[in-house]
Image (tube, rainbow, N blue to C red):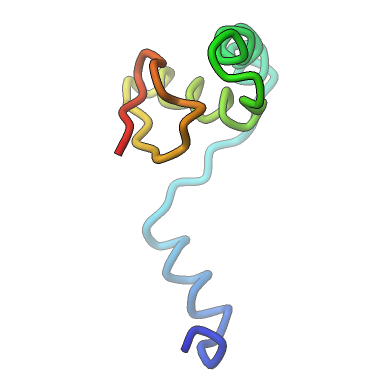
Length: 79
């Protein structure tokens, strides 16, 4: 079970497969209108969802998600 595994081992693995992206003022400002757009379709869409989509758009990527808040959003694909 996961309870027996060392957290630091998980952290090292996750960091080795990840890129840390700084949350800049520019990203937050880009996320604001995205959040407004998301809220038109999904009242509970969060700022974090909008920030993720803003990051994806900045990097010309697509968000892959099972989170229904992304359903119908440009640059997001539902799994």
